[in-house]
Length: 256
View 1 (cartoon, rainbow, N blue to C red):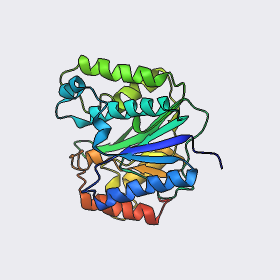
View 2 (view 1 turned 45 degrees about the vertical axis):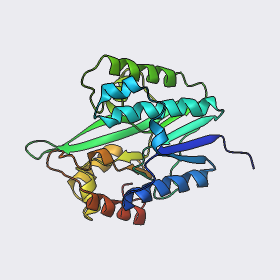
View 3 (view 1 turned 135 degrees about the vertical axis):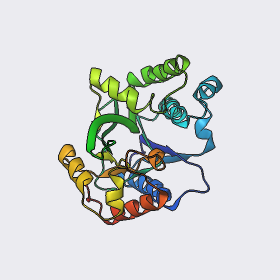
């Protein structure tokens, strides 16, 4: 058997992990094992490569810091000799490790999402975006050094730093100019969509997502950063996320 040439890495603290998030982490580790990939979970050392000035500029906004940290670790791992590195957010769930796959033959790839929300009048709205909940880089990717440089340049010139500036905002704008390879079947569950999954319903949001997505969903980004954010009329708490994770594990093809 050939040694693994793909490294899957994540980051989360080693203690105090919510039960539902532990299930997400376990699902990714299991998927990596099934696919023959090496798996690494980083703890506090995840932030060590980030320059102090960068963290200072970001202040209380942690997301931009994690955006750069994953890129710096990806570069380090590629420099160590790995052919491919794959980052997955800690709140990504892969219910069936045999169904989810990331295509070979691309120098880099990111996640696509159809973000659903309700406006002030309660009307459902949706938009397409690109995110870095999943980020793949292969040896020779020209995008990785560009992305690192862009993150540092944007933070130097921005005050305050927007929490989504280096992730979905940057990647969605870049994709509009130069289409990026995307992972087609990892869906982001917004705080408007997730309650319908958690509460056992098959409502308007699920129907809208299915109509827009028109393809399989074999992995889910639970969007932990929005679990306590009031998004229109939806507010997600940990208990609801737990119910959603348990349902998705029991019904892996629930979303398509």
